[in-house]
Image 1 (cartoon, rainbow, N blue to C red):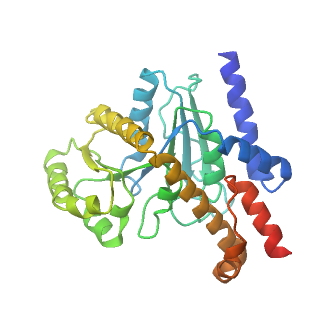
Image 2: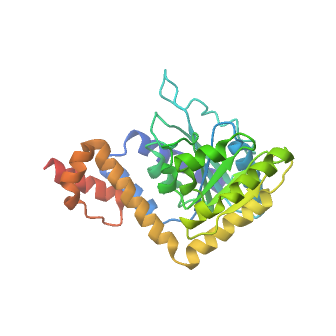
Length: 299
């Protein structure tokens, strides 16, 4: 237990370092080292505020720990307008045992970064992915432009609330292009959840036609523990599929390149990216690559 506690303290120090000093040579080497040694199945849990994401994560954690699997959680919170920090960063929304050394929670502010994530999500994910069996990323919410979670995780779980009209809005906005599993939360409200299931099932041809993976729609209730085991099993089925067909490395390489592109555009603008695109030579280590690109562009 002492050894596990020590590892959690060390992990906290590393994550603090990348927040404070992520441009230094030492930090970039550290990020590349962890990025090159992935372990976890990275799962993104997204959906509108109030849909029940945190409650669902609580129940997933229980299932993971029953199998003696370790779980890391990145909780992306709205930013405080006054401090810029995570507004809900006290982590109290997760009903986890603080003495459980197999669980680690990291809160971070979105800092008004679009996409339901934070600018630090990718480097934080790269560190934590090497330390746990499962890494769950809970987004701030999901809107018409907030689909960046797909570029960070291996599997996206989209949460839909029964009777909210979310399913119609998601179809209009293109959100259904990102999920690998669709979860209808609060399905103890039977009539509404069954109607939502029917609406989504009727549109299944749309989101299945743009995805090689067979997307399942699962009815859940965190309060009554309905569908949680089925969701956990489907997440594991997805993991087997990703590894068996060698999809995982392909997806992760694409994510690395997307992150590099976003960094370049953020610093030098779209014009700067288009002008210098030929200078981007991916070295398999995204953090070293972006440092090299900065040197070439600034030279």
